[in-house]
Image (cartoon, rainbow, N blue to C red; front, side, top):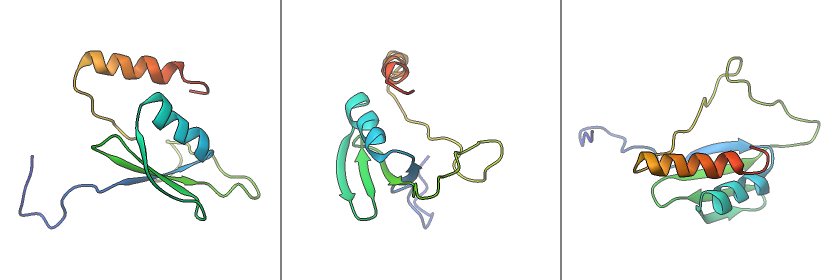
Length: 103
C-alpha cells in the first residue's frame, strides 16, 4: 500500500482532546501497555505510543464546562482504529478495555 510518489508519508501522530488526561493516560499505559513518550505539562498534553502509532492526548479546557462529542452532530474525528496481529489479540484488547473502569 506504500506509494513513494506521494508527498506525505502517512500519519506521524493523531491528537485527541480528552476530558481527563490522567484517566486517559492510565487507560493507554496501564490497560493497553503503551508508553509515555513525552509531555507538555503547561499545555497540558501527553504523548503515548505502542511503538507503531503515537497519540497526543490534549486536556480539554474545563473552565465553564465543555461539550461532549456526539459522532452524529459534530464535525471531527469519528474514531481511531488500532491494529492487532490476530483475532486472539483483538479478543484480549476487547477484554482489557471493556473491563477498564469507566469504559
